[in-house]
Amino acid sequence: MLKAILTKYLAPYRGTLMALVALQFLASIAGLYLPRLNADLINNGVAVGNRSYIWHQAWLMCAITAAQLFVAVAAVYFGARAAAGFGRDLRGAVFHQVMSYSAREVNEFGAPSLITRVTNDVQQIQMLVLLGCTLAVGAPITLVGGIIMALREDVGLSALLVVSVPALVGIVALVVRRMIPTFRTMQERIDGVNRVLREQIVGIRVVRAFVREDREMARFSESNTQLTETSSTAGRLMALMFPSVMIVLNTSMVAAIWIGSDRLDTGALKVGSLIAFLSYLAQILMSVMMATFMAIMTPRAAVCAERVNEVLLTPSSVVPGAEGSLSTSTSLSLEFRDVSFRYPGAEAPVLDQISFRVAPGTTTAVIGSTGAGKSTLIGMVSRLFDVTSGAVLIDDLDVRSIRPEALWGRIGLVPQKPFLFSGTVESNLRFSNPDATEEELWEALTIAQAADFVRAMPEGLQSVIQQGGFNVSGGQRQRLCIARALVAHPSLYLFDDSFSALDLATDAKLREAMRPVTRDAAVVIVAQRVSTIAQADQILVLEDGQCVGLGTHEDLLRTCETYLEIVESQRTEEAA
Image (cartoon, rainbow, N blue to C red; front, top):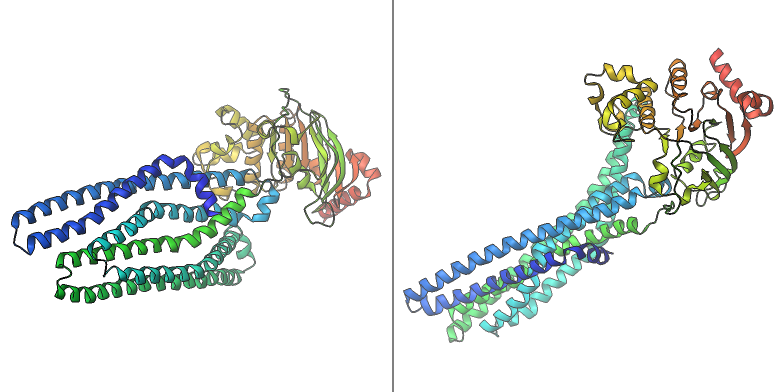
């Protein structure tokens, strides 16, 4: 998985990577040449007292060091650019895939896990690319070049490499093998912490209302402890690696000096050559140590790549249409034709054989008990879900054949849970129509009965809205969401229980103000209050996913027992 992602998303940076390899090659060659010059300086300059040779070699070494510094900085620059671009492209691809998901896929993965995959998981892979570009590219060049140069200095001492390098590689491989399952567990633990934290932040009012702070703190503490234990296990493995590397490095250096001293006594080796060999030995083992950094990052990046690839390879159950296009008419019709919907593996369908038609300029209301399938029915029009059987038609076109942009551009959806984005009142209203004038914004606010409280805000349309709209009341959020839908001037309005937080007087005023605006549009209203839908042209009554009644308010009072029970229960509540 990791290899596939790296191959695909680093392909656009082939030129940058080639320049990087060339620069790293030059930097490594310069680094390998310096010990040889230093050996010559000692053997042919210091040992015989040749000052001119010493100065010549010194200036040459300074020039090579300066060139090495320049190409090393350039290599890091190109590596950082390639890694940053890779991270941007991969993050964009994952985000684009998530945005194409239907509600089904989002629920299967879970929002906390998707957030972790788009941010933390991509960041881990990007960090691996950065380390690979800055460290790993030069490491094999230094390793091979160092071995060659060490053999040139003294073949006898080079026998140490046959022991030290395999020992170092073996230790690293053993630790990395233990790291892979640990890092996989760690990413799952991060998902768990994100999930608990997200629930507690979103549900903070419920937690405090039921005095459950201690329980929620215990839940977070449990998730946090699990992540800490896994992180500690990974940390201990990482901590074991570096001392092991240093033991091999220092033991090899001591062995080289011990063996080299005997060869100095016999004259088989010069002092400069011994010092050069020690430098090459250090470079060889340090290149292995740099590869160790990669070895530490690779298991975690591999796990993250699996998680990211799982998102990239999971197709949306809602396939975008490409052929159909809606008419330019301001009026659209909506029809449900024998529509059924069943979740994968569910024993019973959520909706079963639902059929009705909403003509332009008419209002259809949907009512039923909790869990009857009302929100699922609304979601099928905007393709949050696709039907299991049957068809949802707009102007006699199956919504599955219509381009998503063409479909969504003609629908004004007010969801059951009103959501506002962080920004201002104006930016939230313009979310549905960026070209709307200020007069159109105020007109929509007036119709939605929101103009008064927006004018009362310190900065009017420029007043700040926090993420989710939690700095305004539930009723104000609903009215702002209704105004946002009105700004788009859609041909089809979908109100999913969008009046529940309004008092009866505001509800009545809002529906009265909306009549002229929605006169030519098809309107579908999901509601719990009978007073909200009593004037609808037709009312669809759902029970356990089935249509048990369809008609006007008066007709259903005579013919639908379920509707009559709903009406009577609400009259009883009002009387009480």
